[in-house]
Image (tube, rainbow, N blue to C red; front, side):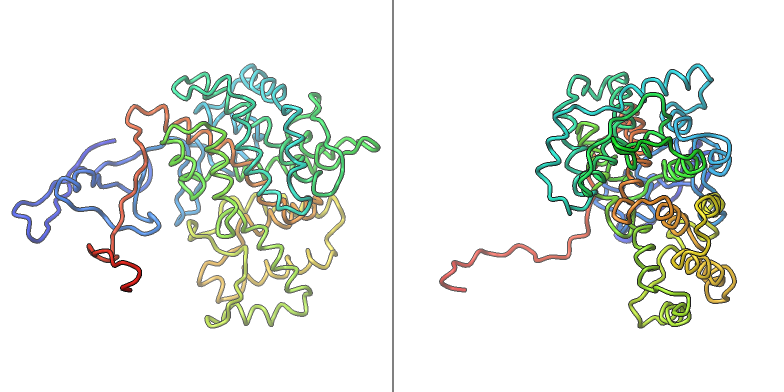
Length: 430
């Protein structure tokens, strides 16, 4: 980063304040406002929309241009030419692996995919109809009680061991959440299957009928994992970093991230999208709902269109759209009423002047929700899939933060607007 200066003039201060300006390799310049505290001033930035809370080399987003890079590689290239395990290695280590490095990494992940047998007993404490994300928050947080042999977060090898364990065990835990909800026996991971095939096996296989997962469907799900692997400093990633800044163990940090991801404004968007499609119900109802979506006074909103970050077309959506159509064709679902409805909505969003003008293009959640539904994954598992995929991003960001010699305990400030000092009044005089 190169350093320049910004001069800030504040009323009542005799001298202006000089603030360093830093330039990254990509993106806007940033003003370092750290020394404002010396003058008893803070910045006010609700939602942190103009605040860089960290320096990072992992992911870059340009929302205006529709760009998403992981370690400098465009997301469409990774989705088309790579696989999720290779992307995991890239995010964690900073470079694409050689074949030998990839094989060794895959071997480690594969041979850590089982969970402690006693963890299966945890599930009996949850209701069968509990939301899978509620179960996942608890089970992932409890992993530190079983894998506490390498929890020295100051040791890079311990951090990498924890990362591999979590990446390996998340599909197993996710599948267990599903199996528990439908009353089927848990399926153990199989070392001869690849990462995504193994997840499909644990989700849909049974001891009575354990078929080889479809290569096309496994590849589609692998792309979903890639497209959701990391997304810069979003709410859940910031939560993981903030929890990690306290020195909390990685399992607790990822559990905190899962809790943040659960929110409908974040990871629950694809779940909300499918719920919306079921609410609309039929192609003949689209015009009514489109009118409602355009009415500012109507609470109805079209889910899966537009994005807070991308003011252009979501680069992940382009890849996900192709994958979505591949899955629908593979399964012969082109004429399914819900999918016909979704494709009609897509056409309107891409052509209707209202949506085009406001750049409300179909986003990754729109296509991933349709694809996951076509794969037979129930709506309440959508965010669990998201959490599974995002685990590597959370851990990469967590590891990067702890590797920095400048990392500090997170402690946001506030603009206090409450009462000033008041005297306590005894209860009999109130």
